[in-house]
Image (cartoon, rainbow, N blue to C red; front, top):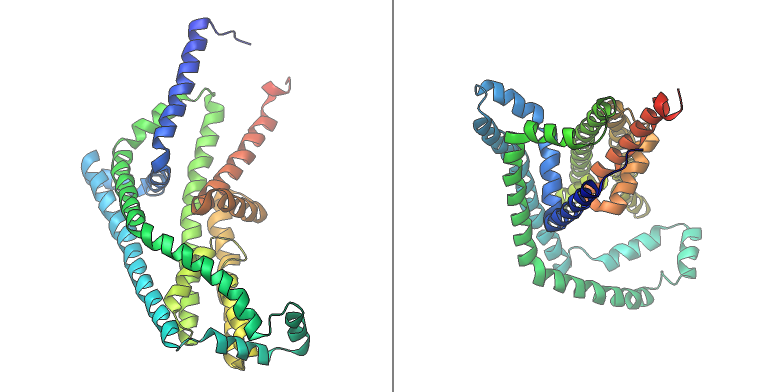
Length: 352
């Protein structure tokens, strides 16, 4: 093995220290930097096409790409968020006015349950409204404290979110403009031979594009279908529940069912038989098939990852990194498989 001299060792130590320090400085804007890089990778083909249209003018094509992202992504998300807040406020007003009475809904659900289910609830003292009210009071107190803290911090959090979006868009402009130069310099700096770097870089870019486009398309489709069936069945807050289902659908196989499943059961046990049956059939055959058919095609096909690896890496990534994990998890899984495949095929590591 090559022995480093003292100046070389000192320089490598300095390189590691300044890299860690720079990462520490960027840590408060880690999410903005991460999504700036992700958007730059996903929309790179669009930017290169605009680069040809504008006559190879990087500034103009980067600015047009940025404006298109604002129109296609940022503004629609902002409008949905505004409508979501409005609908959530409407549901809260209905609860306050008594139009939505959880106590009456609970009584109807208990009355419609079969005997064995009621006996199980009675064993845990969940059928007695007075007992249930006492148990919920403590939880409500904690929730109210949390809501109060959230209300106090709402202005600051909204400002932080606006700053993060601004930083992301600002960074995204330069990633579009100077992306090829930056990627070339990063590629040269990685101390691997080209036979290893080429497939690893290719897999990295492919997995990010496939994961983001595939998962977001599946989430939008499932959320829209879920909100539509809730609106058809006159369930309060269809937009709110549709957005929640869209977020939960980032969890493969089980996501949206967390919402429509309990609602369907409630409709069945409270006597709304046809509504419950329609919701179950629609949920299994339409919403469920979107996940079972589209996700493997859009995500697994391009990433060349087995379905179970996509599922486990997505859930594990979101458990560790939150919303960012639905991208990080499959990327790490793909690089893991690619790296081990390269190692297994490399004769220089096996004496061949």
